[in-house]
Every structure is written in structure tokens, then in C-alpha cells.
Amino acid sequence: MIHIGKLIEAELHRQEHSVTWLARKLYCDRTNVYNIFKRTSIDTELLYRISIILKHNFFSYYFIEMQEKLRD
View 1: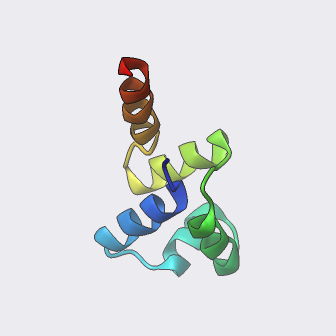
View 2: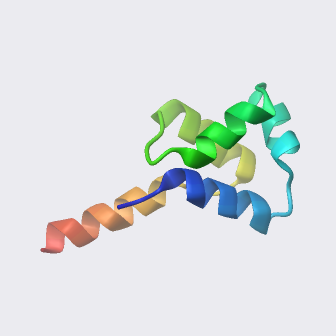
View 3: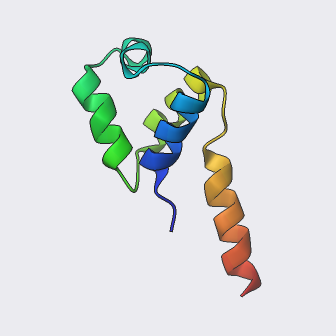
């Protein structure tokens, strides 16, 4: 199962951006970003916005998992 929050957090750190930076881009508080990191699922509109901000397709993780399950 995908833990999307951890994937977002890892990508944010990989790009060497801060939580404050992402919060500013999302127009929210840092605490909201930390709450996103804890989520195992996320609203598609928010995931789309985060994907655009970080220039990383987070939807691809779901596509890969779906493809694997369809092969079973």
C-alpha cells in the first residue's frame, strides 16, 4: 500500500526544500504540511497541486500499484 504522505515528504527533502517553503506554495500553515506527511491517502486536487509545485508526478505511484494488482 502506498503511503503518499511519506512519498511527498521524501521528495520535498530530496529537492532540499523546507516545510515552510511548501506551506507557502500551498498557502497553508506548516502544521498542515506535517499533517499531509502523515496521510496514507490524499484528495486528488491537493495531490495535483503538490505534484505541480514539486514538479513530480505522485499519481504515477498509484498507476504502478494498479498495474501490479491487475497482473495478479
